[in-house]
Image 1: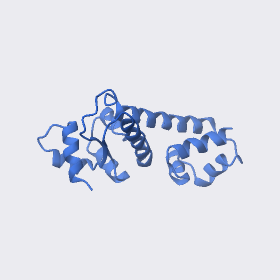
Image 2 (image 1 turned 180 degrees about the horizontal axis):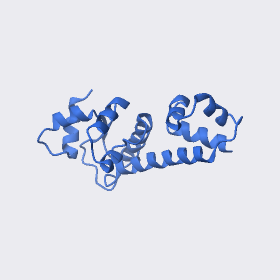
Image 3 (image 1 turned 60 degrees about the horizontal axis):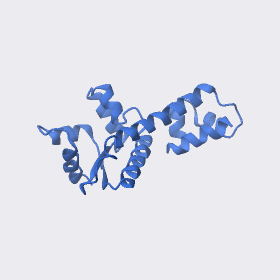
Length: 163
């Protein structure tokens, strides 16, 4: 049963076997053995994967927080996401507050942040909102933002500059 749960969580989070193995700091071969039921899944591994799933759910909830109760205005709700792990590393190097970084999904593998963002998009669309995803490169965004205040309106303006 643990092997099925492990693989299900990995796949639900959008992680390839190699990505999950890297995140768990084990070999892909070892992860395959656990998922195929050829070796028992260590409790700590399941705990780590469950924790990652919980963090992904928390990130999704943060993305929709307060927006689902708002009446749709017709203006797009813009959610920002990292294009690559390098963008996230840039954000970490810039020394942002850990709470703020967690709210942006910095503690998630990039592909998990993407899956969580997509879940947020689906929830918001289900509540009648127009939603747009935009790439987020922390340095480019900070330079573009300049003296502007980081608001939903700024996110919409930023999104128009992104492809």
